[in-house]
Length: 152
Image 1 (tube, one colour):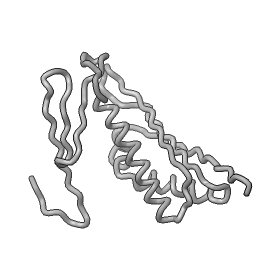
Image 2 (cartoon, rainbow, N blue to C red):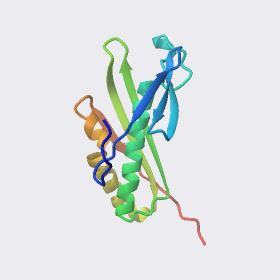
Image 3 (cartoon, rainbow, N blue to C red):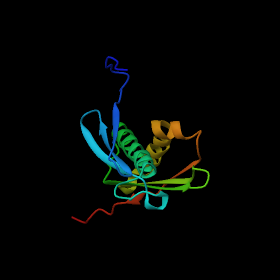
Image 4 (cartoon, helix red, strand yellow):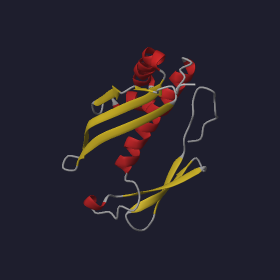
């Protein structure tokens, strides 16, 4: 179904084409292309990221861009930002467990409160986190890094 674009909604069109082996090419809105494969431990060749890796990557990407948006809205002078996602997949019952996200903003010493508030708002507003929350538990940790200003 193709809908008319609006300012409120963003529709996506994702197409996958099996590669004849254990993976596929993925076409995203006719603009981006990537490849997926089954992991070796699951009978695949492991040539490309598996869907779980892409899920965790998408989750981390959503956390990162949501944090950037909050930082911009709060005028946080962000010096750097790292997001790390650790997750576990149970191959017996095909469930995702033990997901932990670490948000590591690098800021000036006088902006610790703002950095923590950005993390709180990110957890609240990241749309992928909100959608995944009913499916499995996610722990979000913030590790603020203080950038030492070099003496002039």
